[in-house]
Length: 397
Image 1 (tube, rainbow, N blue to C red):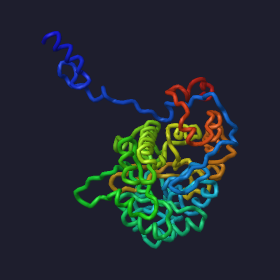
Image 2: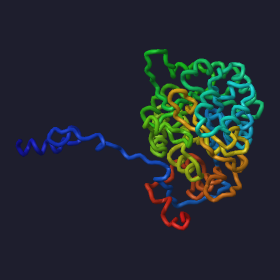
Image 3: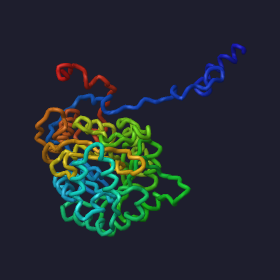
Image 4: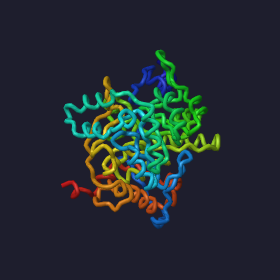
């Protein structure tokens, strides 16, 4: 090989590798960041915490705090939704859960909470074998409204055609089409998949979609007309998707990617599509980092399952946990620590950041000079993998 040819091969190594050898795929792995690997950097201004504005308009629903309760049976029932609504947030009810299978789900919830780890999977599978009843779907929506909450409900894509229009007829305000990985185009040979663009166009209420982690997928979903995009594949405390399927992207990177798609789409169309960070947040600092990464609203599951008002009795489980063939979630014991108000608005009785979550978000925004959530999305974020351990040796003795 001539010198010129060798130099040409070396220059082209990003495409074909040195001397025509293709580079290993690991050479192209991009870095991705989770909550524990970043920190928020103070700037030049601070403001009074009382002056911080945490309100947000979510799909036409005004919220006093940017908190959604996840559509998980151990977290949301009509009573819980009413309590959260009075605190300023919004609960999402799972239309394929226990609330729509049983007139009185409490005994089933008690059985799941009391089951041993060895029998838990069998108990879950049996509990979710009962059929979903349309009359209970209608009743639960009315109970949400009667409790003082806006009626936000969710189903998987396969059930959306059945439940979407019916839920709207019953008075639902928002319909969430939720799956582990959502895309604008789903291919299937054995059935007719949901056409998201048509579904969103003809639904008389806003349609939100989740979950995704990438710029391209989020942008395509927005172009289909969805009202909000949920972010997160596998970060939830009760989710085992990352172990079972080997997929997922750490939340800071995932939120940032989808937020960039939101901003790109807004510049093109003047339509703002909120981004919902879904899962992986346990402490106030993580809520703050999620907003700084670009989230408009935060969906919480296990942190809220710890509330006295939560139906799970100190437990929580992933929505895919009851699968009879390939469970991708598990029941976890989170305990019951106090009222939902204390968990969200304080006062905190612990120093680890797991109580007064919104108060911590407000304090973080104030320290960073962010008067509202949009300003918080502009603060500086730094790569800081030592932020959780630096100088903390005595705390870990």
